[in-house]
Length: 73
Image (cartoon, rainbow, N blue to C red; front, side, top):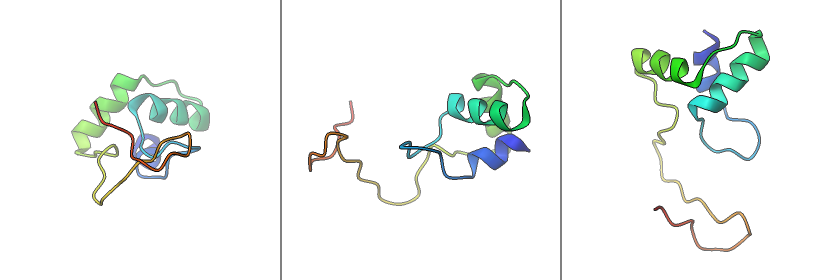
């Protein structure tokens, strides 16, 4: 339940999307139960949740304040 709550919430800090590692750290910090990033991935896959996918248009700008989007390699 805590994994789903974290995955469907807004990520903390400057992050714009969740990673499995970030979700596992969030869960460990809130319910004091260690969970691995791979276990988070299995839980989300079993529920067909994809918190890393964005349904709208997203333009990520450079962290240094530059106007051009970050290149995707």
